[in-house]
Amino acid sequence: MSETKNYTFTDYKSDQNVRWCPGCGDHAVLNTVQKAMAELHLNPEEVVVVSGIGCSSRFTYYMNTYGFHTIHGRGSAIASGVKVANPNLKVWHITGDGDALAIGGNHFIHTVRRNVDLNILLFNNQIYGLTKGQFSPTSKHGFISKTSPYGTVEFPFRPGELTIGARGHFFARTIDRELKLCVDVFKEAARHEGASVVEILQNCVIYNDKTHDAITDKEHKEDRTIILEHGKPMIFGVNRNKGFILEGINLKIVTIGENGITEKDILVHDATCEDNTLHLKLANMEYPEYPVALGVIRSVKAAVYNQELNNQINFVQRKTEIRKFRDLAIEGDVWEVK
Image 1 (cartoon, one colour):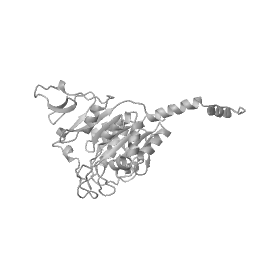
Image 2 (cartoon, helix red, strand yellow):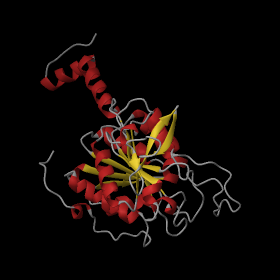
Image 3 (cartoon, helix red, strand yellow):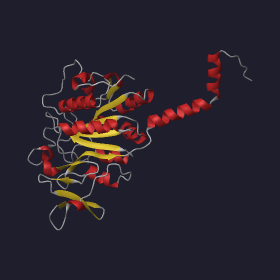
Image 4 (cartoon, one colour):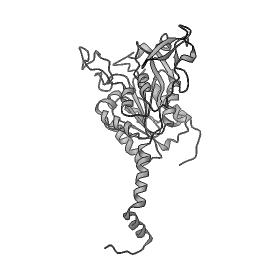
């Protein structure tokens, strides 16, 4: 491996023209990923970016790293193979709500379950953009599109719920407009050993414009989102006076200073708790009942698939008679097999 070097985000930019629509949220994600990689001092020659099919999957062309633009829904399987074949590589899997959760759903949940050491960035614009505006697995119930002209009768996947339900150990959420938060979350995902899933609430300006505006507009975002930080009280609001307590088994929003509530009463976020009960509740919060949780929701250490597999291979090789014959052959000895 090469020595650590100081990089800037331009070291990760390819010479290709970026061909997303003007105003697409993908531009912001690309820039913040490149900035995060620079701050992590990742050698571009040790990074592999793998994508499937969709607007977000053009990502590989715009990165000055190794990359695979693969087939629809299979990016996580190919990314897993890359990581297992060469565990020293830093593998980033770029996917979308359609690519990962529809045709690629089976590959996605098993990659998460196995805890392969990948950074999975899931762009969620709640629409099929590349194929011109069909509803996706995360489109809201009743959403009108080319394939649901009277409103979809399906209820959507929640990527956080799906990740945690698949025994995922790292889940975070950010928004394409929140550039600093994106950089911070991507860095945390990269530092995590195992499968890290980051849901990015991203805007498609052509087929589903302003889909996240209820929680992203400047006037209301402080009251309608909460940025979680490990070890800190779950406080939000434009006046930083709202927070969460537990009422029975449910989260309840309270106001500090009312009904005797003080900051000491507010729940403290523990992203490292192995029990996923509270993480699941936080990941599932939706406006208008609750603010949408952003930041790192779950980050728990666990056995990593590619490390466990490599350990098993090394153990078997040390014990097998085939290995002994191979060593004898290399040394030039002669033996008889009866």
